[in-house]
Image 1: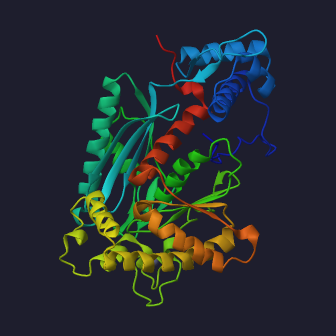
Image 2: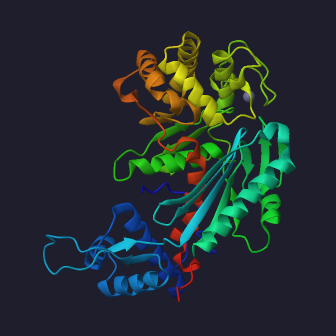
Image 3: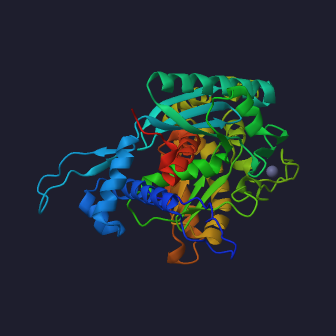
Length: 421
Ligand SMILES: [Zn+2]
């Protein structure tokens, strides 16, 4: 997959510049280089790796042996027709090394375990009415599901190197804290500590990341091997947020607040938002707005937050397929409002692709053509044109991104994974 670079910063020396690496650090750094190279470019012979990375063949052989002992790479299949002396290509392995992503959304809990080579090995989607259950009950449930997944991985001889929890809100990275989740009313929650305590002392490390940013990371993987490096991911849930990939990097902003686009002041009715302000965009393009348009009667089962969201969206999809007037009109209205905000984001960020996630993805064939037309009408120049897509990862995009982020630790430092007996 491509390299959604997450800035970690080099270790500064006393001069403020990165100092020279000690031999052990150099070896770790070269193993990391090799793993990332294989992920980005696919299977490679040792000779190819030497030519492409600039490391000597002897170094490559030694590193490959080390990575093989840890089960992170293995010899792949011989490529037919290779010129010169054939060498077995190295391939990314790590089938026993997984990362786990846990998304705590307003309506559901999504968990995904992904192996080092990017294969999803476990996933669960559980309906949870988080707003009504309250913080403790939701965390208990999420931890219970996580423990079950960890047990199931361990039973399959797979270890989990890290867990990323994605709450629907703004994160204080340094404190491991959820600052504010407007749609749940949670404030200042020490989420890393709360979650880790529920998992117990033997659990892998827990970190936090914003839902939209993780979905963007997961989605960005689809552009592997292309020159598409500027992408905007828009979540379509109760809250609406964006994950911004700029020049191949996830943009966080100085305090992690980037992408909170659901609170752009774009609702002409100036309705009061859960964030405390008025007129936020998500009030007219979010899931609740859509459900109200499709089913104006609050007693309509489509509006029941305790009913599985996937089922409700499926029911609406059937209405759309039957050209139900209210459903079609709702999508037209949402498309109009989407275009207002997205045209702002296109002008500010100039993304090459916009990927719509969440509920939008269920109606992409209806939303995208109209949206493309509306954006084209506002287009200043051919250079601001943008490709519109819907996610292929469904409701599990964020959880998958969380699993991938947890695995970054191994790509940074392969020696975290012990040698296999
Ligand atoms: Zn708001």
